[in-house]
Structures are given as structure tokens and as C-alpha cells.
Amino acid sequence: MLLDLQPITIIINLIVLGMAMTVHEFAHNFVAWKMGDDAPKLQGRLTLNPLAHINWVGWLMFAIIGFGILGSAQISPQRMRDPRRGFLAAVAAGPFSNLALAIIFALMLRLSGLVADGIYAYHAPDLITDPFTLLAALLYAAVYWNVLLFVFNLIPLFPIDGWHILLTLLPGAWLTDMQVPVFVQRNLRPLAQFLMRPAFKWQEWQMASYYVFIALIFLSFVPISGLSPFGLFIGQPSGALLRLLLF
Image (cartoon, rainbow, N blue to C red; front, top):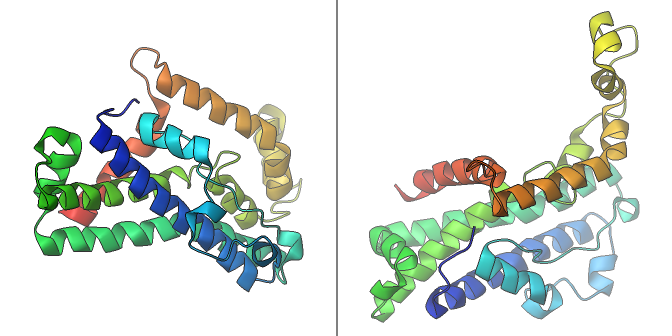
């Protein structure tokens, strides 16, 4: 979905997304380092300097059209003391750092009494006529985008954080062949295979998951019969979380 392309809106988005992305990527790298992965330190990514993390093209795309790759943390479970738990903590640190930021800025917005001003000013940039309305718009945008990034990054599709989180949570083997119902084995073979080896099958389906992700992006920008998958998967939970934080 295209955003309001007024210059002040783009500037606000660039500021807020630059901050949100930096904290997100720093959280990935910092937790990975604490879990034993030395790569973030060697790559100079244990910093809140945006230059160490930012993807310039993705940053601009996100500010203008509402979608883009903001950064990538080169972390690996193989370099961690406890690969499974360490990688889960490092991957989850990114989206949950955005949730933490959303809560902090929501508290600032509510304590300042600028919730309504922030919502109106951000969505109607012509109302930004003084430093207070600009501050309100910035605070609201910080809550809005951090909530959006939190929800978006929990979607279990490759290469999003949610796919990796689910991979680390799934057991390597769950049910034996004899425990899977015969009906499922005969008529729902992919499900039967998944139930017997969840994590391994999930990893095998990585590219299929990636193609689903690309298809959903396409359908969101070129909706068919008004259908916008990301509007359903992201918009509704994000809206509910925004209302919880701000009202």
C-alpha cells in the first residue's frame, strides 16, 4: 500500500524506520554475541550506529511504499554455545525489540496527552504547523512502525524472523509413523511427514515458504477482488495492538 508521499511524511518515516531498524538489527547481533557468536563483534555490529546496519535501498522503499528489507544480521547458530536456544533468542530479539520501542513511545505519547494530535498529524501532514504537532506525529509514527515491524517479523515465512523462530521451536522428531493416524498417512501425506519430522520438513520447505512470501507481496500490491493478504495478516493484529497501546 502506497503511503502519503508528502515530504514531511517521508522524512518522519525515514527517521522512525532508521531508528527502528537500527535497534532491531543491534538486538539480533548483541544477543547472538552474548550467546557465543563472535561474528557481530568482528563485523563491528555491536553498535547503535545506523551505518553499521542499514540497507539504504530497503530503507527508502519502506519509507515510501511501506515495504522493504531494512537490514540483515549475519548470525549463525553453529557459532553459539547452545545453537538451538541461542539462535531462538537472537532471532526473537529483533522483533521483540520493536515491541519494546512501541511500548516506550506509546507511554510517552499517552503521558504527553498527544495521542489524538499524533494520529491526526501523521495521517494528515498539513496539520503539522508547529514543533508540538511534529513531535506528536513522530511519536505516533514510532509506535505505528514499531508495531508493524513486530507483527510483520513474526510471520512464519522465509526469510522473515518468524520462519527462523518457528524452526527453532519445532522438535526434530515428534510422532512416530505408528502414532500418526492412518487416515492422515493415506490422504494427507505432507502433513504426516511433517508430524513425524517437524523441524526437518520445515527446513525442506524453506524455498516453498519463500515463494509464498513473494506471492503474498505481489497480491498486496496488486490485490485481486480487493484481497490484500498482508492487510489481513498484518493490518488487523497491528491495529489491535495499536489500540491496546494507545487507548
